[in-house]
Length: 404
Image 1 (cartoon, rainbow, N blue to C red):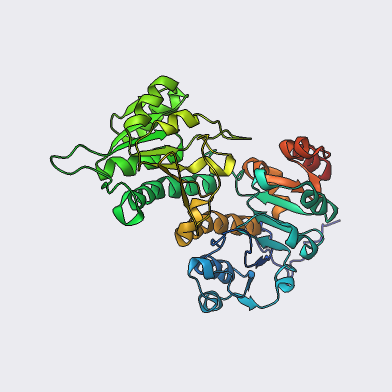
Image 2: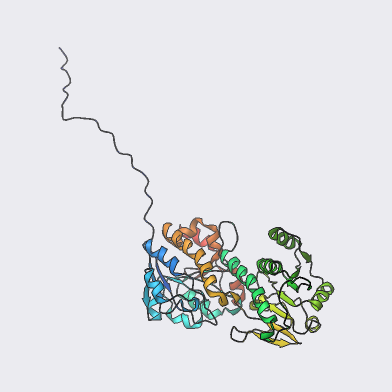
């Protein structure tokens, strides 16, 4: 029996299938609220109009309270032109799922906070109250602090920027109060041909100390830096690119240098808790009349025994014939620069949060972000705050793992 030939139909043909690519999930759309700060002497704003413009053009919604940028000389017009909504009711701004503040959460904010809200703000350990944390825990809030926010290089970018501003501002402030118009000694900060240079003593070789030293040397002053960490002193010299007079904190050497200096800067701080008091009242009393002390560490108690908190309105007082400048939050006096520095960190962070599909998704694989979170959906994840107020501590890593 002959085999029948296969029938080939013209309607039958072979086609290559299209390759299917893995398409990235569309990022989350963010709704951000920026309230006007009424905290003590807070002039900064966490996002500048330029940063808001970038967020809005990336499809996000930004609501700014009326006159929120006033302290940094940003008008409502600047924000509305950048695409932000200007709101006149504070309660309306607080309805945003993400709240970005340049001052810590205070008691007046508590009744406005929303359930499951995300708050990005400073924390200010010294001024923190247990009831504020308790209310935030009850409202299942996720909170991220400026102070502990880390970047890829392992540094704290907002803290570093604020320290750079404070360090640079210190010498401007010193020059201002040494002038005769401010009842100072009438000394020009720096070096003039034929006149011995002004003597500056800086206690603390951190970022504040480094930038204060950099500016003082640039003005031509004679600078002496003290710190207990020899590695820090070496690092300071490497960063400056020149040799500089340095010493470990030896009380007799420090007292001798303070006796003959015109400017003394306190820039010592501990990572947590109070700043160490390294200059006694006796040492201050032996200083030259008309010299000036600038205690940058005053927000953590101060490095000088004679230091007392002052304000931007009344920044100085005189004790033992020595001018004391003890204003906390020096960067707020240079609010526009400080706002730009904070904004440079937060705007890219918010864009990344959106690309990753929200903060919860980003926290899963971004270990630097975990460092900054002190509340996660109402659970307190900061060990120091839990110890301070005797509140329940939950390990953030365990929390995240349990949600997967």
